[in-house]
Length: 230
Image (spheres, rainbow, N blue to C red):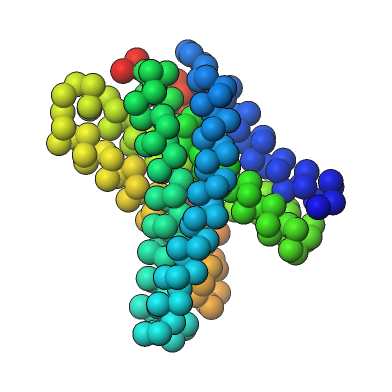
């Protein structure tokens, strides 16, 4: 792959990784763990693409591609649910019981590193196929989208860990569900609004992105400032 294209594909994820790493102000996470999350997050993208292909083929048997039911199932289930679960799994597998997971904001860091590993590989594939013409819009929208979905995932996962430490099993399970459900709903609406061929939905998409990015950035900074030991 052309080095310029590779840099264009990787730079957005690298910038966002550095940002969340700097926001982890109290105690930095072990670098081997973070590297593992990035790598496994990227590999989870391969698993996601295979699962998505199977689910899309099943949907095509029962729906027309333009039907509302098809668009809802494709975007919220075949894409959003599959991808967010694939980004969630490395954190649950490698970080949940790790002794370094001792502050709430740690969960945000872990989820972002897994998600941006996923996003980096996805971006490499898109830029390799379509060139620099997609690099800028993906740097401004797609990669930050994965980043902010992961911020919400991490906020709820941090609350789940806190609840577990306090012996609140019901709350832990609730926050674990929300750590998947909230990113899935955000991701699903993002993709759904782009799939509907309507100027109103296009306008709704850009309005959603603006509000989502601003609110997620506020939640990210607040989570960093209000970090607490578990």
